[in-house]
Image (cartoon, rainbow over all chains, first blue to last red; front, top):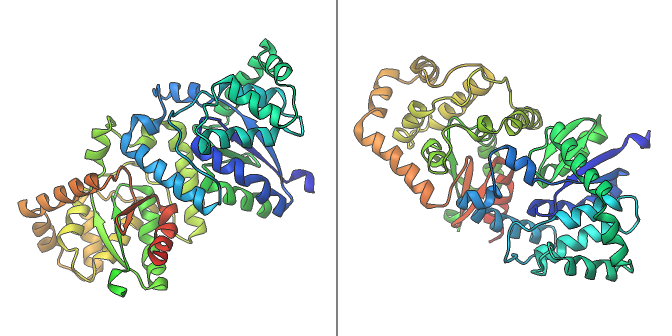
Length: 200
Length: 200
């Protein structure tokens, strides 16, 4: 039975609300005996297909202004540190490639959380290799080897495939959750998704 | 003290998620001793300023497909009837004019709720005078007089002013809530808005 209790957690490193979910999902899943499958993908190509060349939070300033306020409030609610980054959205490509290449490694969720913390609470640019190297070193990992493997053609293709899969699942934003084939969008639907999983 | 416990509830008759809030807000407010000020406005002019000539749920099909699923799930959660309308978005102009003209009348919240029910659970077109007349009659109101008053130049201006006020408050979608000058967007932030009001 318990093998069915799985949630797919689709996240994008540039996404503000994915930060909230990355900081919450493991605790919530542990409480309910659910396994989370962390699925990195890129939102850029999906936004582009919708005709958006930038984050909707930049394209629609009133929405963007609200989002930062809302994010700050929710970080407080969830006890997550927050400091508004100078640059938004950031380029999460390198981080996503690492997350794909090492998705089976025991340190990768902690890496992911620390990348989000660097981005949304430490004013770091996660598009810079230096930021990612620093985090990898903190985790006792060999930065050079990891970066090299993540930049292989095979791994680049794997990330592209993840993004194609996300699109085919009807995903149009991040974070998104899939449980038993049903899509739930947004950090504020994480609890609903888990409840749906447990109930059905 | 209790005079400060007020929430401004900005709603648009064409908005799916406003339906959820219209069906929930009075019960939630009663539990907390809060007064809700119902504020009808038009989202069309605000979307237009953002470059959108249609609902974002139509402009972005993946988002639209998800919204209907999400709405259905949330109606179930909140025990609100739901049937997907054939036409979306509908023209809420006439209904909004009535809601503005009779905002001080004791029957207006029930009128508003019934308009939403007609739209999102009875497959009625609320852009048609007939739909609104039927609801007004059910409430024992004189349909002709009400429609006439709501279509006065003065009242048309009042609705335009509401929309201008919404925009100036940073509102970009519906429903939106304002408590103590802070904006909360979306039916799923109604509880947060009330909590913020009580706490501060």
